[in-house]
Figure 1 (spheres, one colour):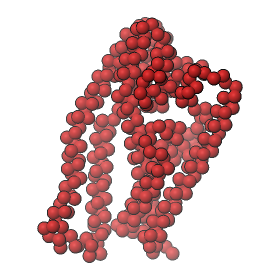
Figure 2: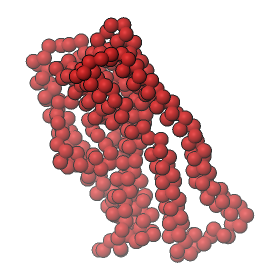
Figure 3: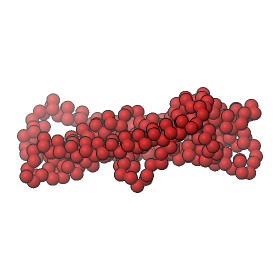
Figure 4: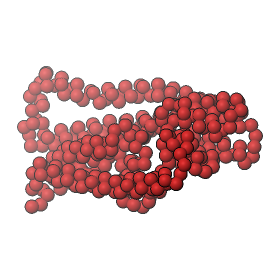
Length: 323
């Protein structure tokens, strides 16, 4: 039977089965990687003496292949299984909601464009929903790190002025700072505990988080080790610059409140108009229920409205992004 003759229920179940099969493949590949990482950790733990930092998060021992299928699919939906702390919801729940949204989108596309394009449209909608959810979690995680960085830099400066080495100051951040800064600097501390130099561990911190400020911090420490000079004064200037950047970002969010309110008003106006028409002239809306082209036009209208809302939201978030 051709796709054009399939009933909508069968088509939705087919989309759900395809996306579910892809999710199952990702889950199996991730379970294999976690099993291998656990075995390597157990093997390394048998020959390593317990340290004071053993309660802190350990480093990742398995280097993922960037050309593997799971890595490519993870990058496609903006999901990094090695950093689940960036996402507030477990990834199976996010994928489940993405599949549900893809099924609904596939049914709407079948109404507008026919059932032939519904499978491709539903799969694309599933990927877009999953990518938006994971990218939203990553963005919020980076914003928290960005807001906490001035306090972390100030703590390092005060420790250096008290005569404490920079490595011990980083260890203090791993103990005293709130999450998620504590987690990230605990990773730096764990890398230094196994012999990684401080400049390399800070560069890894920048590569993990993607924050420019951590890149400035890594470059500052590296240049001070190579050329010498007053590290306290340099980090004090860096902390002042970062603090001003945080204040500027907060001011930008306040100024963007007008744009957010405009987006909310533009989103609510069509629904208010529909409610008013349903009260003042109920027969005006009967066209969308009785005419054969009515559901198609309604689906196109709501689809364009949703696309406009996502576009406005993306423009506002991109203008206020910290990375």
